[in-house]
Amino acid sequence: MTAPESEPAVRPALPSALDEEETLKLLRDGRLEMAGRLVEATNMTLYCTVRLGERSAACVYKPVRGERPLWDFPDGTLAAREVAAYEVSRATGWHIVPPTVYRDGPFGPGMCQLWIDTEREIDLMRLVRSRNPVVRRMAVFDAVVNNADRKGGHLLPMPTGHVYGVDHGVCFAVEDKLRTVLWQWRGKPLSREAVGVLAKLERELDSGSLGRRLRDLLTTAEVEATWKRVRRLLDTGVHPYPFEGWPAIPWPPI
Image 1 (cartoon, rainbow, N blue to C red):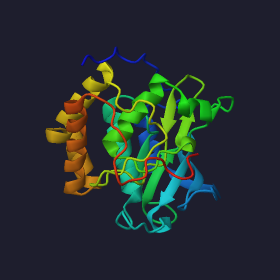
Image 2 (image 1 turned 180 degrees about the vertical axis):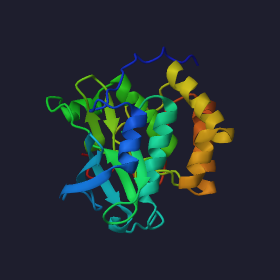
Image 3 (image 1 turned 90 degrees about the horizontal axis):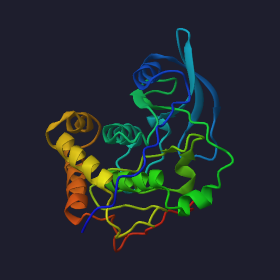
Image 4 (image 1 turned 30 degrees about the vertical axis):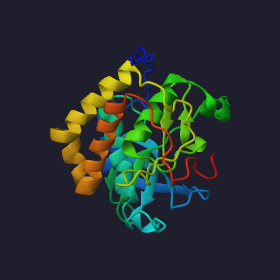
């Protein structure tokens, strides 16, 4: 089975003048000033400004103490999973997850993520159903991190054509829990680009810096399961099908 050609490159642009390393330093070391709460979020999600010297940016802060207990994920682990998703995203080079760090804040430790202002003119439902190659990368990413909650509202389209993804607290379970609205590529051959990225991830998870970083954020079993999912994708060469005995689509889907 021959893999399709690489997806066209779309360069993400951070919504600030800072590069990624500067943004991470700002998020990690800056002073958090709360401006409001996103009341529709399941867990405590605070809209903040983070400041460090003359630099500032809008961000989201999710403290561990505001996480709602879940039956299938250990308590107090969602923030670390969000950071782990960023680390995998960064390793792919696809920049799916906005810059995200684990830090202390006004309500204790939690995750802090750069706020993304989206392109409001884009029809989100059409984007979800599309064959957009940038969204296709997200489908591969979700299969790697075992995303149990890829809703349409978690896609953040940018004016540049890039699409960010957010809300990755319920990822990295050992059991197969992939639940997503992005099933349009199920059973289709992975792109040549995706195969190359997955091969890189396999090496980084096995003996590289990504594996070491994830072991600081997840359990050993969860890191091992991530490597196995990457290996399975490379062995099959196709986008996964929904798993039997598990709901394929999150509710609500948007």
